[in-house]
Length: 242
Image (cartoon, rainbow, N blue to C red):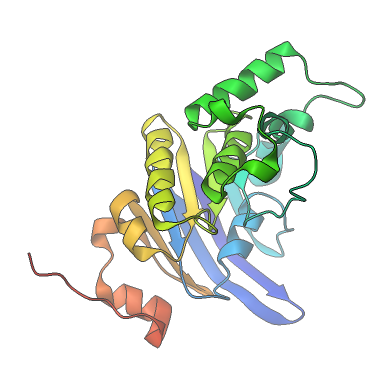
C-alpha cells in the first residue's frame, strides 16, 4: 500500500499540489485522472522519489519512503521517451536498461540477465522483436519494449505516465489488456491517462486530481459529479442507453 499524508508541493512559488491525503491499496489497477496542469506527473514523481518532498510524508508498505527506496524500486514507464531511431540499439538492448543500474560499476550484462530480459519481453508479447533495431518498431511495439524494461526489475509496483501516447486506438486497447494481465498476476498498476473511455474498461480504482484531491476510490463509486469537479467545463459525459 502507498500512503500519502498532508502532501504539499510548490514550484517557483506556485502551488502544484495541496493537502494531498491518499491511499493506494495493493493489487489495484489505479488511474490518476485530471486536466493538464493538475499535478498528476508531479504526484507520481514524488511517490517514486524523483522529486524531493517539501511538506508531508509518503510511506510504502508501511515503511517511510526513503527507507523503502533503499531496498526496493518501482517499475516506471515515463511519458513517451524520444530515442534517436538511427541509433544501432535493439529492442533487447533497451529492455536490458531496466537492470543496468543494479549491475555495479564496470559490470556487463551476462546470459542470465539477457534471459530475464527475454522473459520480460515474452510477458509483454514482444519477444519476437528482441533483435530488431528500435528504428524499425511501431509506436505500439516500442511501448511494449519500454514496458518490458519497466517490469524487468520485478517491482510489485508498475507506474506509467500517459502510456497510450503515440499508439493508435487498437494498439491502446491491446496495451491496456496487457496491463490488466500484469495486474491480474499481482502487480499494483498506477497509470496517468486522459483516455476516460479506456480507463473505464480496465481500471478499478480512480484518483481524481486537480491540484487538490477530489476522490480516490473504487471506480464504481466515482460519479459524474466528481468527474465534473475534477475537470470543470473541459469534459462532457455522455450517458449511454442500453
